[in-house]
Length: 424
Ligand code: AMP
Ligand code: GLY
Image (cartoon, rainbow, N blue to C red; front, side):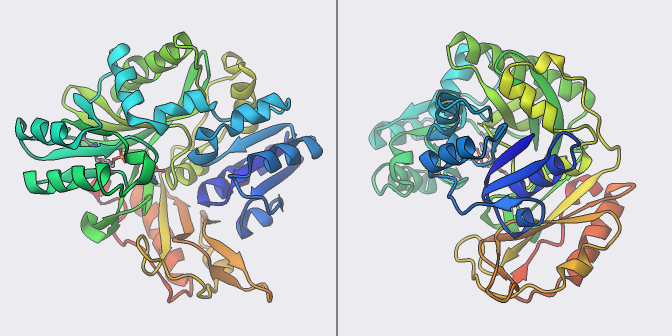
C-alpha cells in the first residue's frame, strides 16, 4: 500500500510512524508533512487545505489510501473530493464532519438520538441569550457554534463574564463566522477523558481512552491550548465506562448518522465527562486528538493499515479486535516559548537524537522545520512530542521527562506535571 497522510503535526507524524511499521505499507507520502515524517516518507509541499492539489497528488501517485489528520479539510469536504476521484480515504464526509463543525448540530443530534450530554439552548440573539443566563446559576458554559481551533468554549464564573462572552462572540465576532450562533449549556461536574472509536459508517470498534491537559502551565493554570500532554490508560475510564460509552454514545451516534443520511466513516473522538451516573458527551471531534493520538499509536500493537483501509471501504466487520500494549504511555508536549498566544518560532533545537535514545522513548515532530544547513528549528506552537512507555505511568513519565531534559532547546517549555491526576 501507498498511503498519503494529510497534515503536518505530531498527530500526523505518529500516524505515519505507526503505518510505516506495517508490512502492508510500501511507501508513506505526506502533504505537507514535517521533518519527522520526512524521515519515514516523502513530504510534498501541498497544504492540507489545498483540496484540488491533494486530490490531484493522490491520483497522480496512485495512492491506495489517504489518511486525513486535521478537522479543517474534512469539514471543507476533502474526503468527498477524494471519493469523487476514486481514492479511498480515512476520514468523514463534510456532512458527517458537522458533528465537530457545528456544536448546535451535535447537540440537536444528541437530543434526537437520546445521547447523554449537558442540557443546552442555541442562540443567535444576544438579548435572548443574556435573558436566559439571567435565569441560571454559575458557572456558565458558552460555546461558539463553529470551528474555533479549540478556543471557542468559555467557562464563566460570573454573570458579568458570561454576558461579556456573549457579546464577544455574537457582536465582536471574536471567532468570526464560527460565532454566528452560540450554545449555552449546563456545567457538567466530573473528570474528563478522551475516547476514540473507528467507524465505517455502519459499525464501530473501540480504541482506547486517554487524558489530555488543556491548560498551558503546571497546576492546570494559564490559557487553553490544543493539549500540553497526554497519557493512557485513563484510570477513570474503567471497562464499565467503556461499555457505557459504546452503548450510550458511540453506537447510537453511528446508527443515527446512518439513519440521517450522513454516515460517519473515520475516527470518532468523544470528549467525555465521567460523572457518577456514567459518561456524558462534552463534544465530538471527527479526527484523532493531538497529542492523544501519539499516546494511542505507541500503545497499539495491531497493524493500523488494514483497520483504516477497512473503515474507508465499509468493511470494518472483518477486522479482528485490536491489541494494545498493557504498558502505560505518556506524551509531553514541548512547546515554543509564548505558546499558545504568541509562540516564538525560529529558535534552534539540538540533541533530539540523543534524547530519543532513552529507553522506550519516541519523539514525534509537530511544529519543526529544517533550515538550509539542515538544523532543526521551531516552526509552530507545539513543536516536539516526547512519548514514552513504562511498566507503570510513573516510569513512563520519568523516561519522557528524562528525554525532555536532554533536548537542548532554550526556546521551549513543557509542563512538569503531566499525569498528576492518575498518579494521585
Ligand atoms: P471543548 O472545546 O468542547 O473540549 O471544551 C473545552 C473544555 O471546556 C473541555 O475540555 C471541558 O474542560 C470544558 N467544558 C466544555 N463543556 C463543558 C461542560 N458542559 N461542563 C463542564 N466543562 C465543560
Ligand atoms: N487534544 C485535544 C484535541 O485534539 O482536540
